[in-house]
Image (tube, helix red, strand yellow):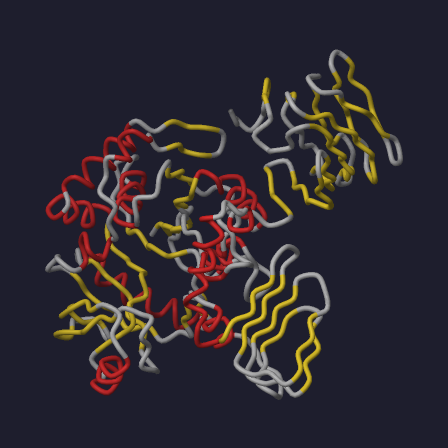
Length: 469
């Protein structure tokens, strides 16, 4: 069995913590590990589990690689989608990858941003699903509903299969209104649609080719024309862009006669909104879910997250308050689905707060903005041990570097030399330069930029070990 991890989402409903270039699956929202890492680590203990196939956005490639490496999963296959085309073509890419060596394994398709608190119950459901998948069924996992949720799609079960708590799928239904959701709950015949699947690679591709041949053909051609790049497999953009944009539910699961639903009751949550974060989080004696430096007075039923400063509340209830370094969200807990409207408004104004945090991650480390003014900008740059920035130059800005800690190997024009703590160097406009950490600890420098234009696109790269243009 091969885990197929779908990690290409943007997670805009958890703004401002989740951003386009650092979405929720890469954040430690519920514990020590990130959502992506937890998706893989909860599979430990399963028999005959092969290295994962991770489907990722090209912009997240180094984040994915670094997070997999940190949990010992760096033998995973990372497939880079050149454009988003939804889950049906993404899973097709994974199926072609799994069959590349002439085999036909089971594919366990999992979104990278779900919470499952009961690992034993999850494994038991997977075992039941595996029995059905081995017989050629396309298995989906239906979450045992415990509330009339209007934010989830539902699956109606049909005739019981030979495997316990496995049923033929009678119907997939869209997100209902409150009265309909209550009737689903009362009937006991409906499950929440989890978006998790288990099937043979060949079984999925056969049904995909039958119902959506354009998706099959585009994904097949794109995979055949893919190219290896460092630890990644770059999917051909031209062919993949020809695929219809369609989810696996609509493309296959709602149309096949081989759909089976396996009941799953394992403390599942998709963390799709701040209200679901509040549902999942531990609460204090006043039913507040808090994280960070927070003081509450006469406040109840709130979710309050603070990233780096003191947040206080007095006499409020039913609120979501999320503070990050560069943004603050205050919302009624019943209105958090409308966070996407804030994100849309910010995008319409070309605001960077939708895409990046103040700390921006790069394959060599990260940088964080400290100050920004007319014709100047100050950043704190951290370079990991052994890592190096590209050999580059700028047309519109000069830079001054001051080493705060560690040892820097600096290339400036034709010179290469070392700088240690409290030493500095000036890089004039138009001069080729490079920064490398040759020491045993992280290198931290303060960079002061000055010039007529300070955008990140004013970079001309001559050499880059990470394959960036």
